Length: 132
Image (cartoon, rainbow, N blue to C red; front, side, top):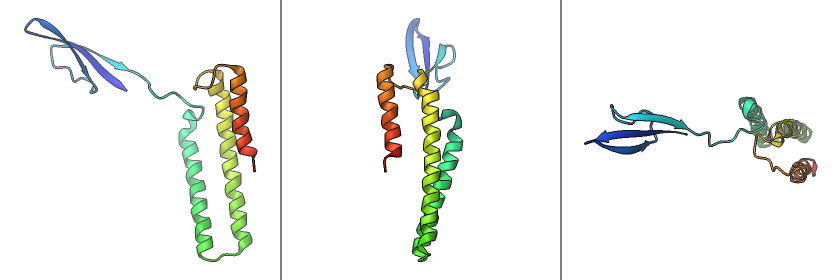
């Protein structure tokens, strides 16, 4: 988020101005643009579009399975597609875990600072992934 912070003189009196629009301070005023990154980077930030593309493909697979059920397709075919969806989701999840370990747990993404808390958080996430 960027804000414009400025000082304007009217009738010889300085006035502090603040605006959410860059360059909103009137002519003749002195202003600075201050930008603050309010969203922390996550382990998947650099590959966000790739992650969204993969999730979109999985979404398409799920819609395909729904169509198969609507069309009364053979059970084994439906089960095969469900297994493929599960495998795709597991691959996505493992990629997220990898990104979390490489980025967030190294102090750049908001993971707990205490190593014991980091291990507990990570093992909780892995436990949810392998729990069936």
